[in-house]
Length: 200
Image (tube, rainbow, N blue to C red):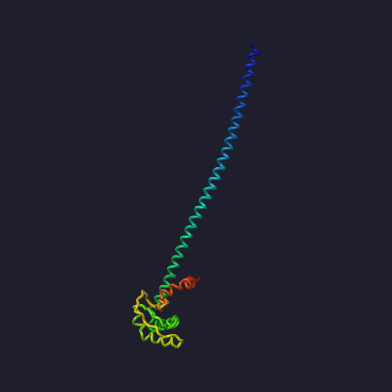
């Protein structure tokens, strides 16, 4: 009986040791798993923070970029408005020249643009009291001195021009209306006007 008790005791002792060993191994594995889980969680947290910071930085960059573009757009719009105003003022100034200066300018332009001196001159209604047959007669004399026909005449045709004129022959029209000339020259002049307006 004593032998059985000893065997039983031995079995119980070994079972207890095995149980303790298994528990310790399980605790060690659990501790290792927990440690790895904490490390992984920490990595995930760091990555998430980095991603969040990157996304925030990217969002900030986008917002700043959009704000800069909007600012540039507004600046360009304001700049364009000033350039438009400068050209409008130039046209207004041309239209409001005193009569003598205006007629001198028209005379020079007619002499320069007349191809053969045998064209019709279309003018605005406002200019009918200034650009008269007598005025054209003097221009024709100057054209004759250049070897041209000297046969410019006022046209009855009406066009929507404010000032300046349109020179019309059978085959050709030369538009010398001030608004048209400014528009035609605008691209070339715009850079210079912008430089003068915005020179620092």
